[in-house]
Image (cartoon, rainbow, N blue to C red; front, side, top):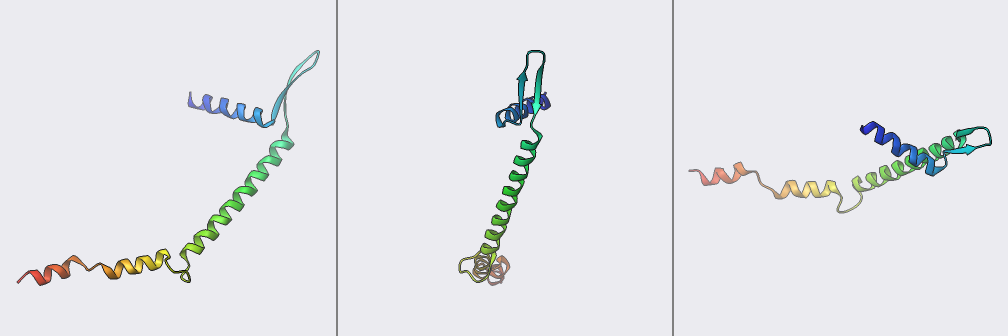
Length: 95
């Protein structure tokens, strides 16, 4: 049932994008799939996705760089130096 719903949604989206359409002539009724438009729009979507991933990777590298103050690495180092281990507290309390 889920598969049929998914296929119906995909068909509606494809129709709305103009990837396929109906043509009614005097003798026939046809469903036309515009392969060139499907290929072109798919390639454009893939290229936009690659650009988005490249931008996200660049931003992730900027966040992880050591040159910038307040990065995650600096915060982790500060966190590790401020916290004492529980064993050191217990050693002084036990006679």
